[in-house]
Length: 76
Image (cartoon, rainbow, N blue to C red):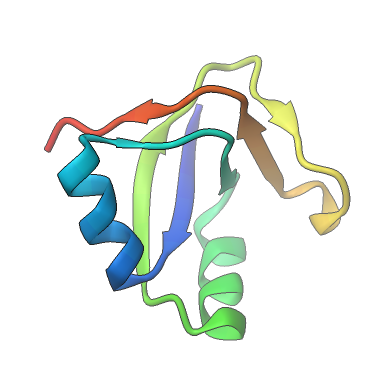
């Protein structure tokens, strides 16, 4: 499943130095929800990630968010 992870510049640089996003990793199912969250929080970077189809629903968030327990490897 394609999802969108919203982050800040500082955290993005940390992801690059670690080579992964440390779990749990939360993301939005659609770009519109990610953009809305980005505007609300001031986090300007939106990453497009591929989660497994069995990603867990994130409580609340209008059923538009999912998460995985483990870390997500970055392979740019």
